[in-house]
Image (spheres, rainbow, N blue to C red):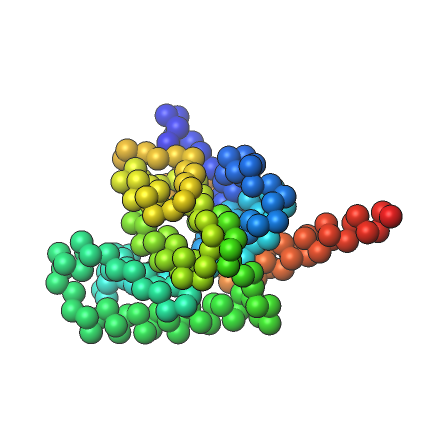
Amino acid sequence: MLSDGRRPFRDRYDAGKRLATRLVDYRNRPDVVVMAIPRGGVPVGYEVAKALAVPLDVIVVRKLGLPGQPELAMGAIASGGVRVLNPDVVRALRIPDRIIDSVAAREAVELERRERVYRGEWAGEDPTDQTVILVDDGLATGSSMQAAIAALRARGAASIVVAVPVGPQPTCGEIARLADGFVCLNQPAFFAAVGEWYAEFAPTTDEEVRQLLENSLAFRAHKSAAPAASR
């Protein structure tokens, strides 16, 4: 963080614009799609996709929070039945399978609801044989990102490039090993929370996610139609 106490990013949109400058090699490539982790990763991903002129979609991930301590992640689930556990947390707290299964079942209901709300009738982008730029607004434990990577591998992505504005060094190292490419603008040695790196970090709403996906589709449709209209 800056020495005068200012936050490096104004908001998630600002972070996305800055992140896009590190991804210019992927601009206008027909084999590239940006997939953002809702909710907070979508404004970041929107700016990345717009700058690179590539499609935007979401990969829905739900953290498996410990009952009574929901901010402590036991792991995460993602679209397609993917489940990733945090073995250190599970082992240290001796969390039984029945607790993990119960939380996972509850979060699966919310995961399915979000997919319906975000996309409506749109089937979404197919990551098969694509280079996927996987975006979030930051890393903490990395459980959500691990689940997203596993889900995209299962769906046949050719290559996965993780791109985030900030994350602690140990988590960044772990995610970099799982991905085919990794971009992180800030990797502090001392890290408390993603929100500390943003001046504005209000929760992203379901409606904002849905609207950004619609805007991205409209932007790409307009861009595709423009050459034809000029002829």
